Image (cartoon, rainbow, N blue to C red; front, side, top):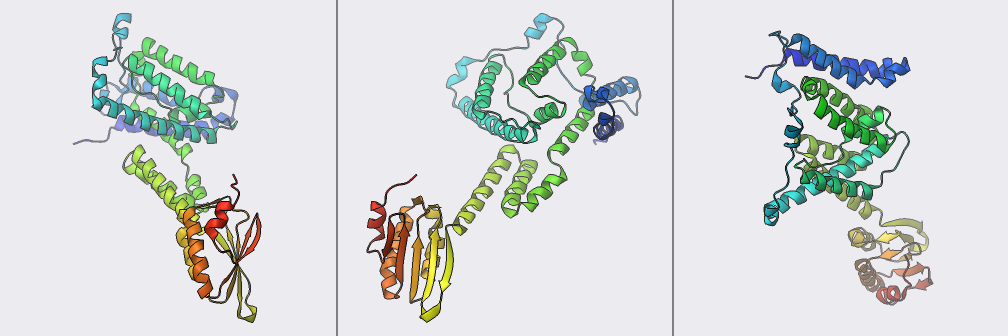
Length: 366
């Protein structure tokens, strides 16, 4: 039966306390606390705790709860970790399926991280997404050539970079070199880092990215923003990243279609005197087949003896399905004593004979 590791728990709790104290208090006390970052202190404390208590039966941290990186004995053994791809498998369809899946997931994750990183960047820089994906693809080719894992942007590393004061691409390049140097020179020291210390750092970074205030902010923006937001989060937490994104996109599309259905037209009742209903219907800038049901419902609900002014002056795109609805309505309007005034950029037309012919002759606009 698995039990809670007392040593790892202590390291995690102490690491959280250090990170919170560093962020809320000490970082404002002097430049030394800004130069020496809280995560580094939390990791060092974790290493010291492990070294002191590794012979203590109650507080010792198991090897499975420590960082585990390969320890090369020599330069040859280090280079021996690299492996070249087996090009004989290039005709295997399973290879292509896995490669396409990795490319899709990695690209989506990178684009999402780019969006999140740009929002938390204090300088409000805008990342060129095409260049980012090109660099990622190039990096993945080179990584695959030496037996490495797929490369993608990670929001935790990017946000930690920003929170630590990184302002340029040089910080990411130096970060990569420091990782390489650390793996070569001090792998034994890295293997003394408790995972719970890194978990504390990850927890704080994650909290900064998804503070409770963010949930309240999304809720205040209305259900159209909040529902896709919360569905995406639940999908990611209880399934995985790709499913969460897919669910969020699906719900977002439903919301867009619903709002498009609502915003296809605007009605304004001008006058009801003399038993004649004067109604003005203004069509939206773009009216597609998604709006067909809403417009058809409004036209069918018009009472007899109605004077309808149909304003399409601001409409730049009118789907053929909508034109056909207007054509059918014009035929039925005569039976219901409904007069139609069509107001367009070409002028005003009373009771047009054919909407199809009219809009065919209508000059195309952007």
